[in-house]
Length: 106
Image 1 (tube, rainbow, N blue to C red):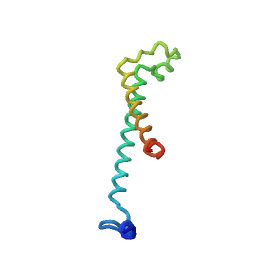
Image 2 (cartoon, rainbow, N blue to C red):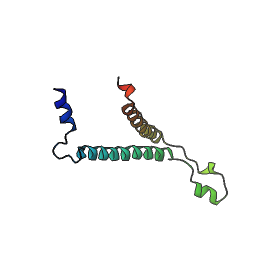
Image 3 (cartoon, rainbow, N blue to C red):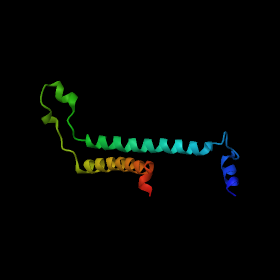
Image 4 (spheres, rainbow, N blue to C red):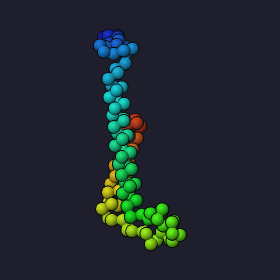
């Protein structure tokens, strides 16, 4: 009985080249690419929202004046949005670590 299981596991199936299921590899590559784009987009959006209301370095440095005159306060919605976007990125990274470390699955 056990020899048939090993023979079935080692024999290439239909549509498999060299015993590799290429559609599964393609699915993993596409999923990784999409997840990477989503995580980087959320992190970039979070950083952009944190920059709302920051002084403009080009204008402040042109006249030699301080940047305090150009400083505006960041709206609360921008701060909340930035924290939420960065939290999405942190949650994705922590979930990835959870998936990679098998100690967490026991």
